[in-house]
Length: 614
Image (cartoon, rainbow, N blue to C red):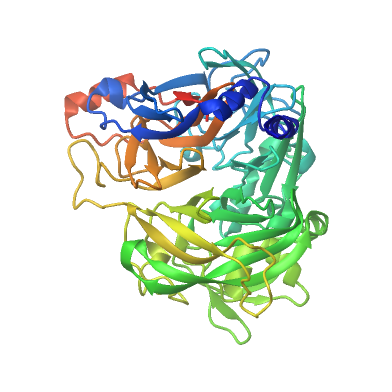
């Protein structure tokens, strides 16, 4: 029975051939559990300017043995490296013809922002890593890209595909070859932020940009795609961007790319497909955003389904807030029909073919606030545009129908299948989440908390939507509340090391990943409140929180993925981006040494090793 199951997993690409040995060992009495032993925050310039782990992991075996192992951070490659046969730097951006994009100085545009990782194990044993390049922060001459004169606030972005080899004895991974994932068939890629892995072994990316949804900024935001990606030969349509992107990797490294128009359009941070292979939850980033759920018609196929938006019905303002959730059905659609609508509909600073807009109250118009901070809109849906609104203006339409669009900086999503719990990170709880903020609604009324929190969503069966129609999923969130141990703590003032949130608590959670075999929720920070950002491990059974990685000062912790078993070893994928973006250390000598040691052009893709396979 065990042998048959393992063969099925190998056929699905879940295990490599090397992992077969560890699976057999596990059946005979391998690793039973792991627990992380945390490390202190860095205090010297040498440690504050590098990515490292001084943490440990306690490994308990089924035969009763206990071992304590050191964790180790390994860099696979940097954004400025050339890997294998790739003639360009890893973070290079490309146009529709696959040619490297250059800036106004003639220098290649190389992103410093590696975000999501998906380490995918293919049938036959090949291993590939898909990596997002989220945005370009610095030009080669050191100028901040979006502030540079005669340059673009946003640019077309990319994903890289890296072939990975493994030394099975040591577990060491190595980047051996690399190429750019071709997005020309879907009109390019726009600001890919967090990502996840589907249960069927594909990469799910995102497209996130707040300005694509603002009438005052959409034309400027899309200009980078029109001029740089299409070389001025085509004007990009904003409705083609802001979607979930699925990347399939075939043996040999061939990739196939699909944009899932049926999953709606917003500032997607991350989508997570649950264990039924149909139910999906999203992080919608920015201010005044919504909580969305997509339910596919068929398992393993995200091309057609039903989109819902949540209404927060507050129960308490304790522990970052608690609420019952009800779901408003936005619509049912398929990729093909919504893509057709995306090609037909228009949205710019002066025109929308889906909504009519007014800047003041007007008969027949509804007042909403969706993705626009403190600015309200008065909108009226044009006749017959319900489906276009549901999938191309998902956040506006959610607000129009009465869903809650008061969430702020909703980021990563993770799933605990054993406890039937979804986790969602909220980096900053302010603006629409605070009481009486002046918006058209006041569903969320919790105290301002700049350090943010991670929320747990309880799932149930037999749930009906707001109009009494059955929701076709057994994994529908009905209750949402902050996890007490994962609620940040603001400090009254910044300390000498540049921290303005409690150092031994998570601040501004972003990346989330849950490992069921480790019974651990991993949390990566994107914090403006910790001088260094950290990766944390939270055991959901023991409730123990451990700091296990530190990134360079000012850098964000990204790329989080846990691979529970590859060739007898486990890995925690982890990147950092935009090092040195903020250095607020009070000690002048320490700050000077930090600045001298920090290479702001450099960002790394890597992993934490030292953990046996589970």
